[in-house]
Length: 466
Image (cartoon, rainbow, N blue to C red; front, top):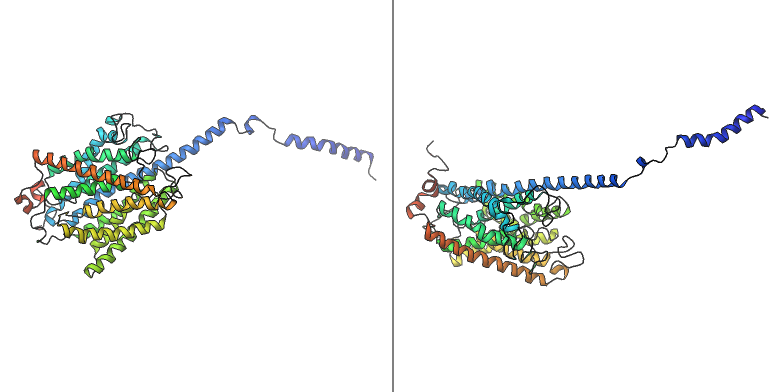
């Protein structure tokens, strides 16, 4: 049917076609096989991307925590005092931003985070020696140690600033500067080392008394709150307290300040995850839920107590919830966070409405009623609700808190709170005595009646004659 020539052509194509396909197919070569060097480059690129993402989040978190002091706390406290004391009160927060930064760079960071004893760090990082742009795996493996250092500095700034609420309107600016500078070295740095520092007594990773404190319930709020109470008792009451009415001069400023605190607190708590992963998300959500629930709890309590809900009560409740969730934010689920917030709002309002009036101490802006009481409650509830499903702090197979079956953690939390109370009370009392006997703590009666703005700074917050 086919000619012989045509058959020869077909037969030739039959034998040559596979060779043609083979010639067109890419030949295996060293470039086509993933080498060890290529795999290493890919891993390095992934690690660099993670470091960049984590570092970006941590720098933003550091800025958010600084926002909490100025303008957040400065406005919150400034609006709560009388008009003649607004600049003096705001200057106290601003002074901490400058003074503590310098002390932290010289020796504060080293005392808190260098290797040392169970109670305090050594001088390994004095003048920030050895604190560079590479990670310190003892603390955070994916961010430069300088980032970790500057983030922790923002905590060191706001903690003594919180104490100023207790002695508002009656301490000399010079005395405040000396007292709180010394306090940051004698009380704050040792407490930070014990809870977060390598080899610290209360460190959850190998400490003798492993205490859970994700973002500073004991380190920040218990220390500042207890120190605030001791300072208020040592200084005595303001002239006219409690018979003279001393209402906030600007609830608008305090309202703005409280909202800035709420926003900044996301950096405070979610930033304490030290990375941009799921744990930061958990802490972020818990922070918001607790603040909302506490605002509701305080408002309900005040509504029942006074017959009306006030803006001051609502913002005070929100701050109380933020305080209480701080140690638990990276350890609990969202609904326990809501419960912690609700309990904080009710408990702290009780401390402010009832306990303060029973004992008649003049904690001007309720630093103890919110931070001391809220921080203590939050630290204890952390031991109750912490779960390895959120943060396996003691290992993947070990229970974290009582809800997991580790009831002994409640004792560890109580021990941590007790140590924080003791160090804060004793250290504060000694420092107050020393400063009082050298330069004096309290302004004169004349200066107190005039106001801190004019007597301490020679200026006024409001020019009512213009």
